[in-house]
Image (cartoon, rainbow, N blue to C red; front, side):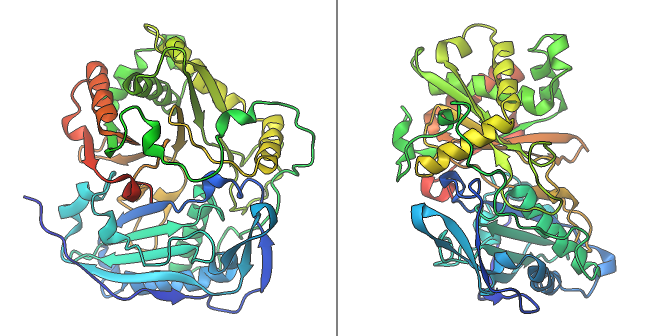
Length: 454
């Protein structure tokens, strides 16, 4: 029987930079400005007890590290404003970020499985401070440090996606960790750059429109044939399941493809089967691709703004779902990745600005992002690296890929999805046919869509 968790939370406080910073107004880039990035991703990190840290309070250590790191990352201490054409900018005013200190009556080993995705304990370890979850005029960061009776602790964080992408957020946490371990300043100094690429070129490709629908308020549940009753799905793929999936593809292809690419192709086809689209309907796939390290993108070391694009590929449902079409699905997945070139980025920037910063809206468009190697797993505040560090729950349309090490020392890939209950049930059945009954490796928890999209 699972132990009932009780969390004693202190009132949220505001943490400001340890020293005064520059007061200025900073415009976000056109990539930051996308409607689809006006969200507040969450991260959960679990740290084991460390005997060398006996008597040290992780909440105090991290709170002090936040204040010192904000001296360098001072835009995070500001507030977003919206200008003409919904252009976003940060008012760097040192108003600060939110911080919560808490204690829980459990040991880490008692809740280990419940902090993994889809994280049924998320609300316990990351309290939604009333009035804090807006995009405009609200704190850009929310931290909660929860001490456990074993000496370990849970760090929950929520950040405003318009200011940084997940690697940029990991850079901030790494800076905090270095400061908490005694470094006088971060080893990588943060840099702010107004534009990734100047969106002043004529549109040279016309593919960018594939990613977007119309901006505005969308009732996402009604787009699905199965309607509401949205549920979170969390699918775990261990070494055995990964080998089974690899063997669906010809040897020359499977060995030249990453595990992420193979899983994307496999799950895109299975998800489409579960959605039961009309054979003539267009289904789409895209993966978030980092522009860091690309020769055509002038990104200096330390840049922490959004540096990702999400090129889409499209096909008719009947072509994706024809018998043994795994290789076709994989070719399309690789095609999404290959489209992330200079022409595409310029086209995407042009399109988003000229079309009112549209949102991603289509339920037949599956978007993926790989959070397995973004640096969160290396963050060490002095207690060692985290037992788990990653996203706790999925979002509409977009699926997160992450990983963790299980009790047998095996690396498990985790894929998070949000779908209507009936669709999710069909997806589970489709996976069961191919990789077997996952049992403990696959969990679905009921939740309202409003909660799930936070």
